[in-house]
Image (cartoon, rainbow, N blue to C red; front, side, top):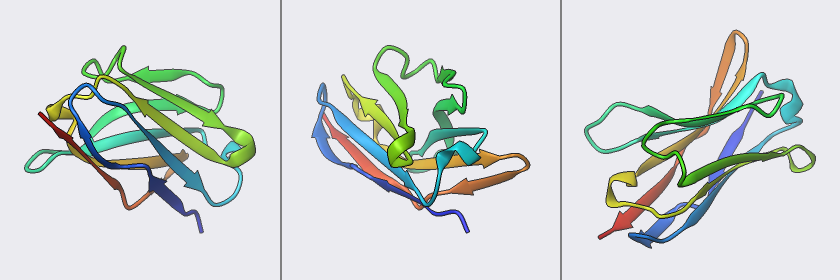
Length: 115
């Protein structure tokens, strides 16, 4: 059973920074890719950033240049460094892991950006 546990969310002022962590149970080498998604109130869940097992990254246009996804294989953890945060970044952020054809999700961590 794969477990993903997100942490690091909280309340931050616009322009501030936060680092989210996603700790996986067991080696993240098992996964083809991992990523961060977010869901704002009343909106659909959307992709934020992904990173493959080979280290290739992909970002939503709305976060390019502000967010950085990274992985620490030794700690079985994926991070999302968020900078220059905006009120529109407010959402529940979810971690996702893919081991084709399976997908695994964490329960999410809330990020609130005040103006």
